[in-house]
Image (spheres, rainbow, N blue to C red):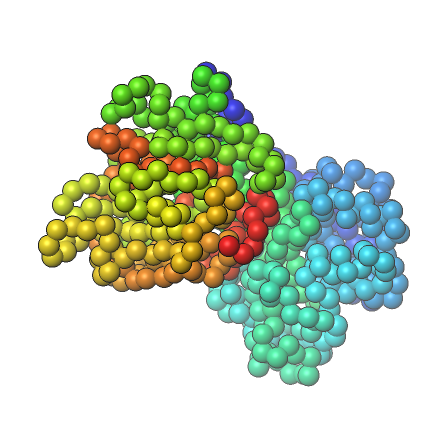
Length: 536
């Protein structure tokens, strides 16, 4: 038996002994000189002392080439303006650009958005890194901030509204379409013509050209750098931008039932609520050459730790094992598992039950389909935890015999007459109008709303526009079975009969419905990682 990839690192060990962050506190400039520059520099140094980080402060652009940027987790452009002339020489620009492209982190504070004179191809690249550029502002005054997302480590401590005195920049373009906005400013709360037409983002983050970028336009006054709320915002921003190098968790650990991810999952833009991450590149145990014995979950700390082969019910032992297919060029060199009436089972009976009794779920499958061999008509499952019985319970992802994708949640509520595969009110069929093309790779996604009454089921193919959506009633007492990958359940009575033919490269399940913005982030990330074409 051989094990393909890495051993699992327990989350508790990872959290207890984090890597010491190295931060480049960069304040080289060529423009307006803020009186708050010393306070800005001192804040990052103070955060370094409090957290045990290594902070290197510099006001020289030559540091970008003289220092080994690859040793830094984040570079902070700390309230340094460039509105009068170039800050960086071409070699320094190139060094910084390569640092980001190699997975580095960037935090831009206040006037870092007004670096306008770098020239050449670097200038638009830098404005893309920031998200936009500062244009002008009214006089310094008090305004009301709206905290749009409090799940991020930079904003989890903030109230829903925050009144601050600062300089309220207008930007050359609204960055919202390309970034995740965390905080916006209420334009009715300040005086002046410098506004953005009612939608005025002010703090945001995004992944950009291989790295992570966080920008806050706050930071004009001396006083804000000693404001505890702003201090924690900067601290959380640094932790998030540094997570691109595998050093810090990118999401706060919530008090509710949300499983913390392993370091292997921190490259995902959304980690909150991640319950299952089966990655064909990681921890696939094989035997007899390339036959898969076990597939390990990259999220630790829950009962869905591993999916294993199932011989019970099969005439020939080992015939139910999928095949590992390594380095598939069509999906960027990622590996995949081939299922041909085969399955892997998580042996915990109740691990996924809560997802259909109220928490909701979101799942992502990077997959390809083959011609289906009909067993039970239109039931070719690529995952599911359906429990047999008089009414059936669980959720699943399936293919029709013609390779149209369908999903469902069966809640165990009784219907009149004999149970049927679908029931328009109790267990509706959410289905694509067109079949998938054989041997092409797709990103297939499903989402179920949270709640214990009537919620929506939504199905997506390669984009965040649902191809179908139907309401389904929730049964808080539903009791599904073991989760299977490759078929609808642990079907020892007829193994392979309701299984699909195709490949799965990545299967992720969140124990909550992701927001539309989070779904967009994950879709973009997985599409880029697996070279998925954007239209179905």
